[in-house]
Length: 313
Image 1 (cartoon, one colour):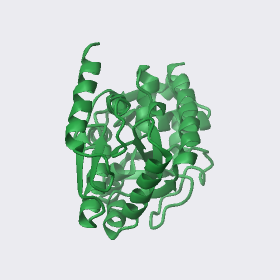
Image 2: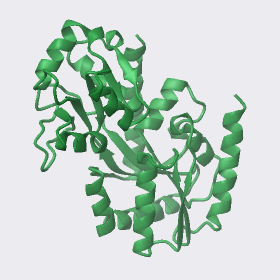
Image 3: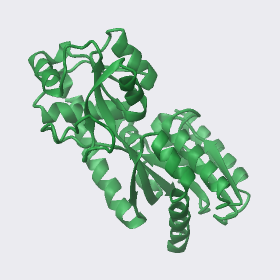
């Protein structure tokens, strides 16, 4: 119980040391609320490289603050006051704060801008008897415990839960095997431990292209350019939960600071370097400003809380 606040204080001190000034164009600290190698880290590293390549900021560095589903980073950011600190966050942190009842919550910090979202793919092994989503749903409905799902994090389970509800299946009756990341979820599918997943697009789509997995549906509101897989709404299932990523500043920053940060982000995401990253990671650009993002976070929190109620019965 003592570890979380100690880690939070140490992280806040490291951020202050890294900043070296408060002007967002001179010194900027990008906070990744996870260890190196994950999706949040990749987002901040790509943003760092984009800003460096285009000389948008004099000095920009990434600080990793892993732990508690990203909420330790939220707690650390909430202790800061300087505007030149930007944490990436989104669906995962909301899920963690609800699932674990953390003291630090995303509304403790200041929304600046939503940038991208990543879609999930409902996927089965290539040798699966289910050639389409309706076939999978039919077998799942007949015997929910026998249809084992897997996923690389809480977001994947939320998508599975949303699909279960749309299909009239009780989520709490479904067998769900939590995996440590997308790679482990893929192995669970390939070795027969699980029969289906709702995993992240960047993890699953290359496996579909290689012929190891079969994609049955994209969890997206609209069809994706160049992707010959139908969306769940097209297939009759109103499931559109996305793994969105937004940038957050410390609490109490001024409207002028928010405007400066929004301008900086707008410049960064317009560069060729950022467009290339969006393509490589299969992200979808979904810009949303600070004012609209406040309500969006509130709506997503309510939505995700409802899904956890279904999971917990």
